[in-house]
Amino acid sequence: MEPRISLITLGVEDLERSYRFYKDGLGLPTTWSPEKGVIFFKTRGTCLALYPFDKLAEDVNPALKVEKPKFSGIALAYNTRTKGEVEEVLEKAKRAGGKIEKPAQNAFWGGYSGYFSDPDGYLWEVAYGAFEFNEDGSLAIT
Amino acid sequence: MEPRISLITLGVEDLERSYRFYKDGLGLPTTWSPEKGVIFFKTRGTCLALYPFDKLAEDVNPALKVEKPKFSGIALAYNTRTKGEVEEVLEKAKRAGGKIEKPAQNAFWGGYSGYFSDPDGYLWEVAYGAFEFNEDGSLAIT
Image (cartoon, rainbow over all chains, first blue to last red):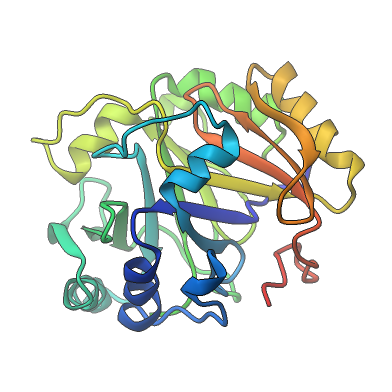
């Protein structure tokens, strides 16, 4: 098994709404559109995918009839190259219809960060100062 | 904003248990250990991180006292290079203490896949046949 995550799929309530948030709002590139029933973004390294929540649950197990949770237990993170970008990205997410869950502030781990949630409530931390970057934009995990 | 996901953090109930599952069971590389309170794996593209569920919720908002959901609404995916690897990875996850949620089978989208869940119930799809690979092991999203 190679050390990589190929895809992260978010189960969403409204595919069109989430597509607009991530494509138009955050500017993530894709050639897919909602009528195809699934969206794959060309995010580097690990691909972000959107798929209807009910269908995702059904694909795992048709007996899995569950409510969408308030807090998934998972947070995605976007690490910035400058401190100023943290506010910029949070503002961008807000303008796109996201919610700022925690304004940018000094973090206990020594960096600077905040959180926004997407239209389904999935959390993104926007963080500066944790790690250096590799050439391809991924984090140089120590 | 660059098109990338820096980190995906799973909020886990037992950091030691999850560390063992991903490091010893699945073989993901890391220099971190549970006494540091957080684990970062050197996964390509997007870094996989483990952090206690309660602390993750508290980091977002101390008022966010929520139950860990049965189904997070999110699925990670590991795409294989051969069909046979799908069963191999599912078996590896099972031996490591994971649960096979859906045995390997032909998928509606034309490929071959199955699902396992990690010790916290977070879902991983193991899939073959969706996309070609880039040189770095990431998916060549069309």
